[in-house]
Image (cartoon, rainbow, N blue to C red):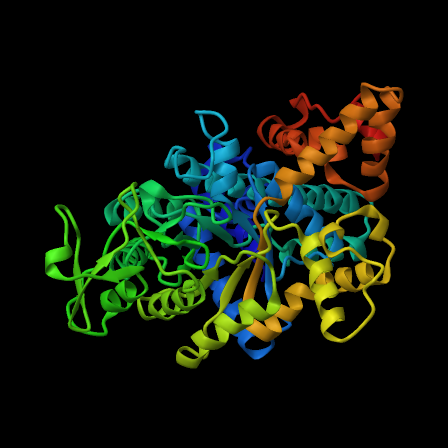
Amino acid sequence: MSNYTKDIAAAAALCDTNGDAWNAINPESVARMRAQNKFKTGLDIAKYTADIMRADMAAFDADKTKYTQSLGCWHGFVGQQKLISIKKHFNGQTDRRYLYLSGWMVAALRSDFGPLPDQSMHEKTAVAGLVEELYTFLRQADARELGGLFRELDKAREAGDEVKAKDIQNQIDNHVTHVVPIIADIDAGFGNAEATYLMAKQMIEAGACCLQIENQVADEKQCGHQDGKVTVPHADFHAKLRALRYAFLELGVDNGLIVARTDSEGAGLTKEIAVVKEPGDQGDVYNSYLDVEEVAPEDTAEGDVLISRDGKLVRPKRLPSGLYQFRQGTGHERCVFDCIEAINAGADLLWIETAVPTVHEIKDMMDEVRKVHPDAKLVYNNSPSFNWTLNFRQQAYDAWVEAGKDVSDYDRNDLMNAKYDDSELSAEADARVRTFQADCSREANVFHHLITLPTYHTTALSVDNLAKEYFGDEGMLGYVQGVQRKEIRQGIACVKHQNMSGSDIGDDHKEYYAGENALKAGGAKNTSNQFA
């Protein structure tokens, strides 16, 4: 007996128990509303999606082609449309497709202060609010899809088509939800470890099963692809990792996941000199990367900060800002050390920010990490901050030079030029881009690939094209040809925008409440019928 059938029986029994006053309550309508509201709370979602991620990680360990992917979203509608599109194009399944919640997009697009840089300046509650909004839209996508199936079931029954009715009932019983895992960006924790814990609880209660945190100073946080990044000693970062774990455990999401991100590859500064308790500990290693100069006691000045290293007195180089700098060329080494220590502190997944997207650089670092932690898995940011075209054309160019191939037709510094678009070198570069994710997963154990800001860029591009045409010579044809005609022919669900906003669900409910007296919006005069 399916859950749907069980719910009908349970509702019928409840109606019988309550007597004549409940005679107008239709048990099947109750079962339908329950099916359309599978997840009652954000914690239900967090537990469900954490199990999905854990299972996906195990599947990836067995087969490196089974990596996962996500696209960043800044609005519930964007996330909903992404999942509806995935189900449409991939046999009704959402396997290994997630959502990413970008702190950059929250700052730039969701703050009451207006557009802000990615420096943790936006309201803390905005992140949890977006998690909740994304899941609200995904749950409505479920309700909308199931509502359509319920209406088809009623039509099949009315027509006496038992075969079709049975098929539709099977689709209802085996409905695939639009609810998928969200990897949510908690920046550097928005304060101390207690602030991190409190914010984590809000995000988990909203439905987040996976939280990503970086090892930057919270009040100096910068976007991972900008300069001026300042890291913290491992003890400080690990306290925040534990704060996240405690938040998951307190709320009963025992399978919750933590992504530890290191920005050390591009971060040349630290605000603190780490505490050293014994030679060779985390603090000692962290300090070993500082840029220092040996001094004699008599050469010190008022206010100097000195540390002892290998029996010698050294002075860390301090900038006018009060920050200390690391030695040049230590980023790679520090990333590896950060990753090893983060796993020791309980992180489930790693994230290494790199300056350019190159398989060999990611592989080199992960090879070092996996000597200590063989199962270490990476989340990698396929960032729009990279110029993918230029980077990969230059990689192809350099490979040709190394192989002794003639590159006289190409200017390495001008490879973005459109004149190269149809060239052999550009074809090779595009092939490298196409397989980049698969190559990274195979070579560097990248479990999850994400693009942080794709919907931001696609919105900007499509609006630019529409404005250029609509306000130009094309007029209304700019919208009809460039938007609506494509929506209809590609089967984009939102061409019926009334349906997407819940109008048909509302009509169903009106019928539940008022029966034949219901005043419904979806009648013959509804212009959305033109898109049938």
